[in-house]
Length: 114
Image (cartoon, rainbow, N blue to C red; front, side, top):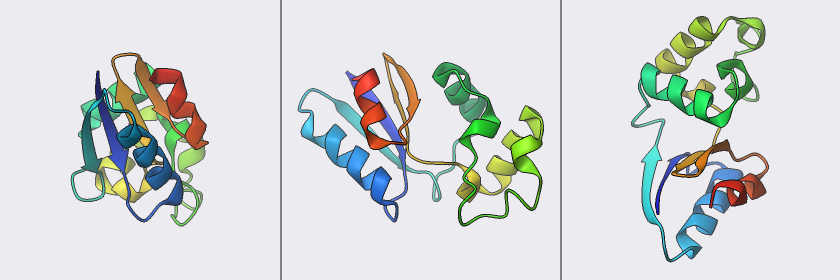
C-alpha cells in the first residue's frame, strides 16, 4: 500500500508517526517535508476533504500567528490561502493512504488508515 506523510522532522509527533509507518514493511512510503515542499492549495483542500475535516481544523496554532490573524474563525478559502503562503500554519503530520487521510494528532490516529 502507498502512504504519504507530510512531515516536519522537528516535531516529536511527526517523528513518531513516521517511525510507525517505517516499521510497517508493506508500505511504499513517501515522506514530504512540507516546510521545504509545501502541498499545493488543491492538494491541501483534497487532504482535508478526504480527512472529513474543514481546513480550519488543520491549522497549527501553537508557535504561529494563526490566532492573531483570526484564522481559526476564517472561511476555508482564507485558511487555505494562508497555509499555502505560510506552510508552518499546517498542523502535522498529515498521512494519506488508499484507506483515507488523517491528521495524526494523537499519533495513534495513523492506525485508522493502515
